[in-house]
Length: 452
Image 1 (tube, rainbow, N blue to C red):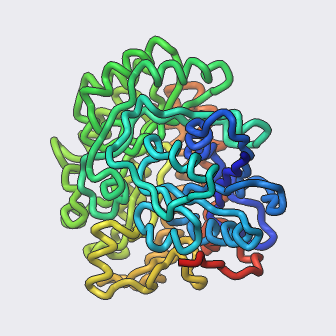
Image 2 (cartoon, helix red, strand yellow):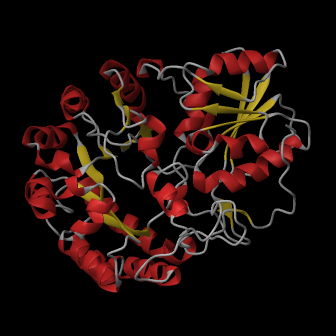
């Protein structure tokens, strides 16, 4: 038996190559490959990098869906299903809106796959696929298996992705993580993480721990940090800002080879933070104290900001950019608030009648960077414009030079060498991202729904 695993792109714009910073290894595809029995032949195609051979023989197509890739995934599924090939969906989006996903597939895996994938493969082998699969329990993360051989020959960014934990306990109202994992956090066994890193470190210059929140359990993370110090690797991750107030944790981050962390600042306005249930951002002296702590330990920051909450106005954008430059952030993102299906934010906007689209991720009129809801103080188009202008100011030549020569950003030779190429790449992609289509705008087919 043969299965084809496909990683869908966000979309394709006519006459343009895919955005380079969006081309990291798709770890979910490798995880599915790692769970698949050895007697099943696997073919893997990445829609961001290559043309999909729809007519190649296969017994099933498997895709992990994100909300931004859903429309493109349904296009790909339609191509296969009109050729009589069954399609199996999983991933975040399929779990958040299974009723939608199953319209375009023969089977949908809800939640995590480790405890249920063997059953899916067995049913496929016997021609008895069920419409939905969902494990009764959350899997022990010791069951994670990753098969990176499927990536051979493909040109990804030179970053090794590794999973060390799943979930987050915080209740941020815009975040789909809390819905998918029901505000739980689990740590992967340290010995498994170490074994995986050791197998990769000779050919990987920088690791990215893709955890939803590396600091989801600060106490449990400390033994891993001590092991990482022994391995002498460079790595980055994403974490909540509360960890910046734990002195032992920060010291271990530095000693373990951590070169930077992505932190969701989201807003400088305390009323906005309270609305999004993220007022913990202001704990123990707030942002200034947290940033001083991180700089003292030579931890660089990738900061993210979102706009569209009720207290945002034009000044909010200006203040956020000025703050980001003053705080010497290595890179930063200035994005509009995105209501993902299944989140408290989406439900609230839906109940209040503020959504501009029934399902923005499927609407042919929707483009990347469009604001899919109405706000109180700013028009959706104004927010989009101000987000783009904020990125341009942050990634201006003057800002790049000023931040680049800040002590924290030049304190490590590897990160300093890469600082300017990374910042100029983000600068060059500002206009490329704006208005990017969801789905392939050259696709001429029709979405093919499954029979019920």
